[in-house]
Image (cartoon, rainbow, N blue to C red; front, side, top):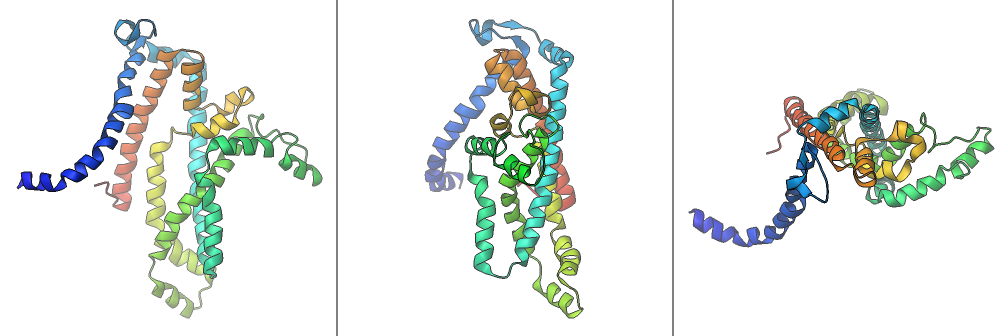
Length: 298
């Protein structure tokens, strides 16, 4: 029985084999390098001969003042991104759902969703030009009597620039999820509401929002797993030394310490700490998603 089933599915297994090999080579193979987190790694001596320091790198990290600020920046920026993106996606989905002209609705949705496909290497250059001290945004603000704002060089402003640009790029993806959830609501509920004299806002408040509540909870819960991932590509493309205090996150700090300053063991220890915490958060988020939204992975 098993032999017949395996023989029948053999072409599918062969088709998957290249992808499995790539995953093993590029995802699991490099994990051997995590041993650097417990060594005073020296590239000349390699993994096997470098001095073993145990948990010494982790103890050292707790004494480094920068890491506490970096952790705070990561959590602070990530939480703001999750909250703002969720709220923007819900509001935009509700507004799009009210559009009755189907072609116009599709065009608007496509325009909003398009930034999701753009790389931050491209967007970083665009936003640097737009938000420069003498850029278009500050020129417009100057015409309405507002003093120029140093968007990419002010520690008080920069985190909000990250959140705003992230929402602009990613909110379109969430719109698809919420529009799909809205389309699953029974149309008879709206017909009954109209007969009872309910307006559009009343229908949104009493039918649409309760109808997608479980999806909102699910999406917000699953986002907890990425709370330590503040977006390396975006931050790296927009920040500079002037805003390290408020914009430096775990991934950018690891990049600078590991690749630029050649402190491989310290950078690996930080990244390993992030991976362990993220694993715990992902596990908690899936448990909460199962508990509150009956969401199953398998």
